[in-house]
Picture 1 (spheres, rainbow, N blue to C red):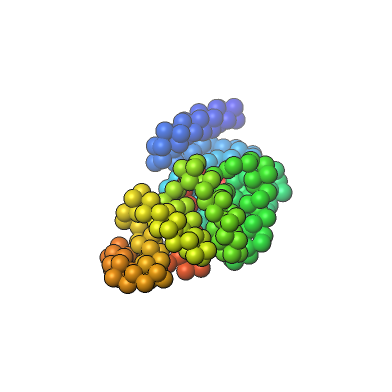
Picture 2: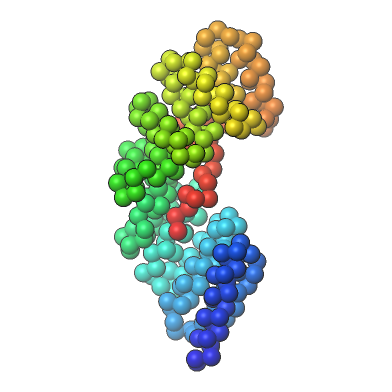
Length: 273
């Protein structure tokens, strides 16, 4: 019995070290070995090891494996807050927002670290167009951890959807100052200046966005809209052509940011763990 426990500990510690070194295949193998030796009746050990295998799958962005591993984790230990948080993150990434909200709410109830969970739940609610509840989650996260850059970015998107342009501009400005996905933040802020009719500031932000990421079609499409609104048709057409070249499959939908939600996937740092 003690030998099995020792082997679990050895393989688990090796797995953690491999995970920290981004050696994901060997990390997975070590955690799998730890599971083989884990005592059958020890639900807590099984839950923790499954959760760490879920972390490996998260790094791989293999969301179905994350869901499978975290489901096994909560089967063995129903009180495991981190497992609910990881599973909720996977559901967000897969677009299963109702399941995500349920898991992330359970993670909060069981004491998981609040700001990243609130950010992820706010993202799920934003994707469901539940703007007011999304805003409440982002505000709650910022109360616990003021100035959290990714929350500011997503709160800015929410304010934009609500037509609260000045509040959105303030959050995008702070995101830019924090260097949080600045190309995205510049384009988003430009859309607010456009809505306010301040095309000079919109153009300044769009030129900055393009300079930072010249292969992103979204700022070109936004700039084309602005050019057309001020009667610069030839420049509008040139930007539309460039946007279409960069996004040939679905250029207008992809580049226009149609419903106002974030046009890109969030950075890895947004994952609730």
